[in-house]
Length: 497
Image 1: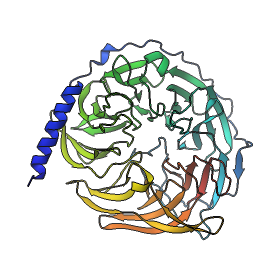
Image 2: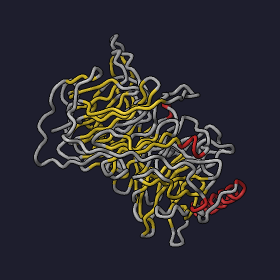
Image 3: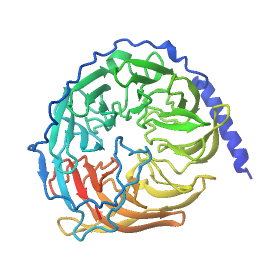
Image 4: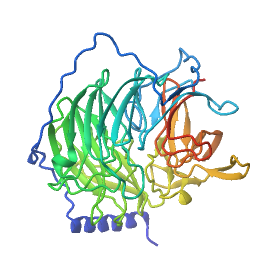
């Protein structure tokens, strides 16, 4: 009988053989080998004589003011799509223990364009990024009223070859009073948060000869140590690029064969060193990808661990999770599932364990205590909520909660979360199903308890993580609701206790 230890040695050997055959490199990246072909023009931001006033607009519907925020409530900004700490957790407190009869109360909603983004919020500024007509649009709103401060747009040409949305996939990022967006056609834009003034903009696809993407450029940029980190993949072998936050100039490029995936980079500490973690693996033939550890100051590559399904039409879409000391979990929904890696003292990846059945499509697993929780499965029918022990990779449980709702015609409809998203706040977990179900869960190593549930709407492709800011909940409904004829919307609900 094969032991876990012997199986691990065989698996590692197999990956080393495959990696060598495909030309994977694990040494330094020679970051200085890339030059900037076209540094962007930097525009001056003129100071306002008085703050901009927010205004109503045709697509906005305001319902009622939210309950007063408790003076004891803890709040936190939400500057990036996975929240303040890039792990789908927020310290927000004094949130509802259960949902009101009849469902959550809407504060406001606005019709949105196409795309798969969430809002980001800092202070009294909410920023949303979508596509309206033939333009990608960045708008700034008051988070509690939805009223608009300003709007910025630029022309875009993109038609999804698989029939999905033609809008942006990557949410905006707010840092140092600036906004950064990466559009579906690789337009990297920097705006002033207060005024919406363009500071700089680049067309990465034109300037760097980027590889093709299955669904457009879709990873969220990371702003770290004064740099905007963007997974790329160019004909010259630049796997990741870093651009000066203020000028947009290329600071360094990491040389490697892997192209940008749909997972977003994160910053963490490995062996006491500040590091950027990138889960690469977009369109390529043969299919390649895996986990990169990069020095954020130089772009030098510590190590690259191959982890990608041997299938051309596959991508790595689940953002990595930093776990404990020097460990990172990554997952592929197409064939090979999840793996826990550890960075050793030589700054090389070591495999700790594998979980072939814990393959997450785009949602990021939630780390609570010594367990990871997430909706595994590539497609709706094979999606389940599961828990895995981070110490040994053993599955604690796998469950598929379901319930009955009624359609507008009075027929019973069996509902599930399918490929849902998890968000942790106020000592509880909120789950958003991909058809618009929203629930409070209690997750433990022993199982899942569905504390309360409500149906927000019925709409496909509800794939973006919810956002909580100052006790208000923001949900992106990306498709129209066929049961109510409601168009795609960004909706703000009152979640204050």
